[in-house]
Image (cartoon, rainbow, N blue to C red):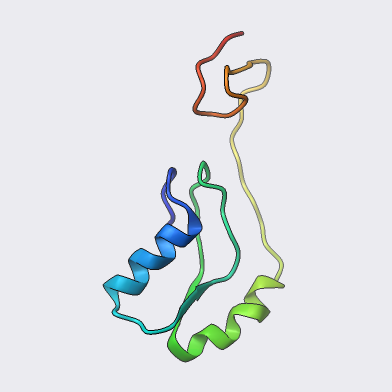
Length: 80
């Protein structure tokens, strides 16, 4: 799972280094503030990236209604 605070590319590069892969690609980006499954293809499997990129996806999220933050995102200080 991609942790909060990492870009999709940072996660990709970490996996690429871990497996010493010459070729790697992810099948879509997650916002740096999002955590979740980030499918990564290595080697010849990168040919599947396009198919996976166009596949159906499901998103789940948690939110708090009625608050405002100083930055307009989850990292900002709550102001109301």
